[in-house]
Length: 251
Image (cartoon, rainbow, N blue to C red; front, side, top):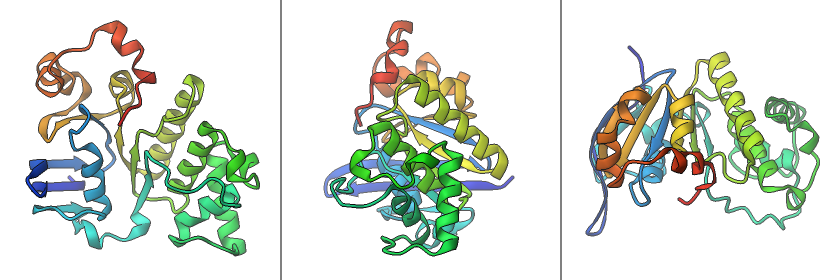
């Protein structure tokens, strides 16, 4: 079996604070993994390790068998939770998508870059946003542009940190259809942080329940057991809590 991501006894410490401890995990290639856990559980830290933005204090992380910091950038597509770009910057949506190709701001697009960026926007049903200024995009529209940016190089591994942020219920459902279609067409692996347990239950092939350590990992029906949820959160959600989880987007 091929593994997209492997964590081998990984710990991350910031001074005296331990963000992750003793993570041993193998993510099969082609899996759709939903990562859930309470605030401060280390979910975003986990993605940063895969992206090579952070080095473990001990252990190692492999991406398709290659140490994460050396994995080719074109293998990875990323949608961050917090958008640090100043939206007052006089830039167009298509230029933001193209940063997924160059990894820097493109002050002039080549014909190849322009077509690839338009194709990525078409994939997320956002082609009409291409020449709109970033300052004029709604939260949901900006999220679509970031998703197109993640798709533009047709990566083998997608990493998404709360990708439904800023989307209404219909937009969120549409986003999951787009992710599943991309995964199916490109045999891609998806790692997605979410607070929405029902989204994890219905869209993921695997769920990782995390609270600095691996609490549970496997098919949703096993990982989302009462025992795992109690160990991670200290309680088990009730049906009415799950129904409102779409709106719970705190980090």
